[in-house]
Image (cartoon, rainbow, N blue to C red; front, top):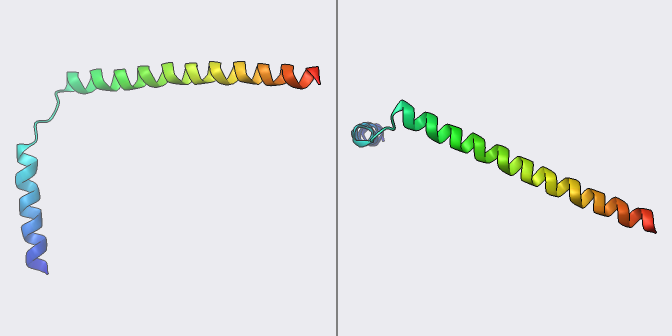
Length: 63
C-alpha cells in the first residue's frame, strides 16, 4: 500500500509540471469577468423577483 501512495504522488507531481498556469493578467481578467457577470445576473434576477412580487401583490389586492 505505501508503494502505491509514493507512485501516485510522483505521478501527480509530474503531471503538475505539465500544467500551463495562467498569467496574473489572465487570472485578473477572468476574475473580473466572473464578478461582472455575477453582478449582472444578480441584478437581472432581482429585477425579475421584484416585478413578479409586484404582480402578485396586485393580484392579491384585486381579490
